[in-house]
Length: 372
Image 1: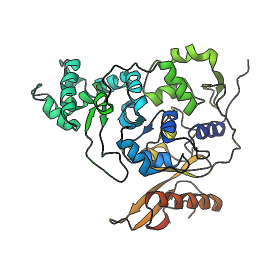
Image 2 (image 1 turned 120 degrees about the horizontal axis):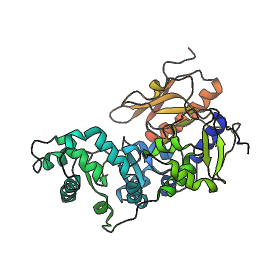
Image 3 (image 1 turned 90 degrees about the horizontal axis):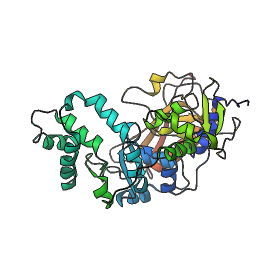
Image 4 (image 1 turned 180 degrees about the horizontal axis):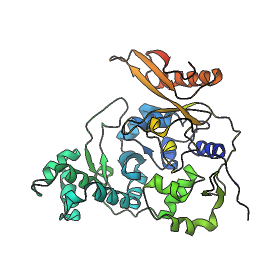
């Protein structure tokens, strides 16, 4: 049977549709966060821009209140990175992704933790984290009393990777900050009962719903899990198959939207680390081939990208004065942009400024203009 080939532009439109970026969705924030299987948010405020770019009439203050009410939490999940998820998804996702935490800890700190019973350490850390929220360094220092001479950082990270620790508020609230302090998900969410892990099959199906069509390696890159081939094979009879331009086998849900490469796409502003541009092994469906990878992912300081015609074409940054009376949106194109595309970016940028700095004086500045 002939397998249809999907172009990078086909895959781009399918991805943007499922990521709620072709047009803003009327979904509730919780429904959207679950549909997207979480929002990567190493930087706490990132969930606000991520949801503003995706949802109709997104209310940051309302989301912040719901976050403070513990309807949402931030916790280490996919790729052992911090994600914002709903309270309902928190523990089932953490359990199915626990092998990612285990492998990350072993690879980065295995030698420094040799000889330590990690289960025993986790129980000691649980008591400390439930006494009061603590930073990883604080946990490490206190754990060192039971493990004298051991590396404090390694002990703190061991607690993080062996326990479902959530970051507590005010960190993550709208226009607020705070130290990254943690307690257990069980205590924070008020449910000490055991919660079953999400099945790997469900995780893959949810991934395809939000990121498909995708390959086995795409799903593994997104989740951090390995050996997902057998999961895809189990699901194969109920999936449809395609191939990429490079010949890679792609899986998808039969009824999932695939609007085609000619679908028009508005300009969008996304936060750094947004899963839309790191959710695949093959990122040709979202990264403009003219932009070197290292220009987008510069070590620990990745860019906040804007998209034009669905693909990353540059970066953005908002600067405000101390009193937040003036805000400037700096746009740095990395490839040439047309007048029409600039007008689209400017219009969306004006809306972004109104969202991030309401009531301030707004300005838009083009930097390092590739058009000269």
